[in-house]
Structure formats: structure tokens, C-alpha cells
Image (cartoon, rainbow, N blue to C red; front, top):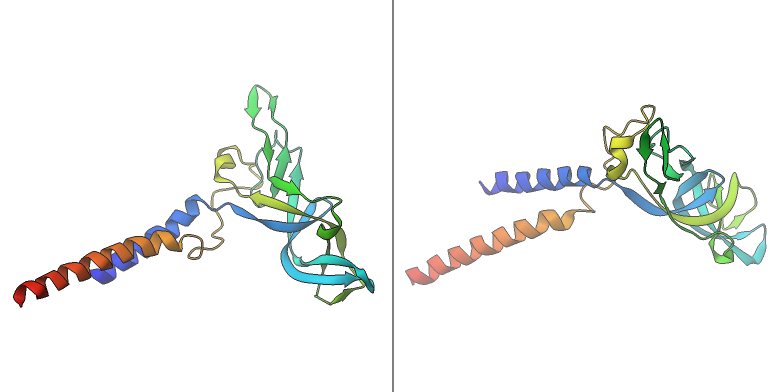
Length: 186
């Protein structure tokens, strides 16, 4: 019985994550693309006074701008104003939480491999905070970018509290009940 309860809590916690599968983070904005895999800091072309944040160009997320009439694009960072087209209202979406543009300490580059001194890049820009795949917009998705299956970013790490807290409470009550029975026998 305990085993089945543990499995039920694990499955419930994992499926709970699918309901809130929005992805957030910090990345390097290079044009209309964001490199999301942070590698570290490095000097820039041998200048020890210029430090840049280094991101991998292996995991790039597109920024979809001005696409409100076409619908929400899952898998992209959406940025567009509210509008009405053909009698249908589309809400404004801005998944760029904060743009660090023109802040020298947030200058970044996208590279294929990390080096302590950057001498070659596939893109340069400034960092930004983003979020995307917001379930609140799934009903207005672009048919070419379906939102039917939400990504499972971190199934256990994000929601570990929802699994461990009920299990801990159940274990505490069970141990307490057994210790009370043992105390009554003595």
C-alpha cells in the first residue's frame, strides 16, 4: 500500500508539471534569436577589461514578433501587441521579462565552444530574461506551431516539494501512530 501511494504521489507530481510547463531563464539576445545555454564569462578578443557572458549557440530559441494575428507560437518567445483581425481579438504577449540592452556587464556572445578568451562568435548581443510556452496562451496557438504537448522541462526538480511534502506528512503520521501503539503495549 505504501509503495502504491508513493507511486501515485510521483505520478501526480510529474503530471502537475505539465500544467505549468512554462520555461523561464536568462539568455543572450542575438537578433531575433536567444541562446539559452550559459557557459560562463570570458574576456573579449584579448581585452582583459572587457568581460562578456558566453552562451552556447547549440540551443537557440526564436523570438516571434508581430505574430498576434497568426496565433501564439509554442517553442518561441512571443512579443506582439494586442489587435483585432476579422472580428477576432488577440491578446498582447510579451515574454521578454527584462532586456539588459546596452548594459556593459550584460554583453554576451554565442559560440560553438567555450574559451576563456573569445576570438570568434556566431552572434553578439545583450542578455535578457525570458519566459515562453505559457499555458495561458495555448488556446490561441498558431496551427503551424501546435501547443498540444507541453514540454516537460524539469519534471522532478521544479515540483519536488509537491511530492515530498505529502509523503513526509504521511510518513510522520504513520510513524507516530505506530509509536503510540508501542507505547500502549508497554
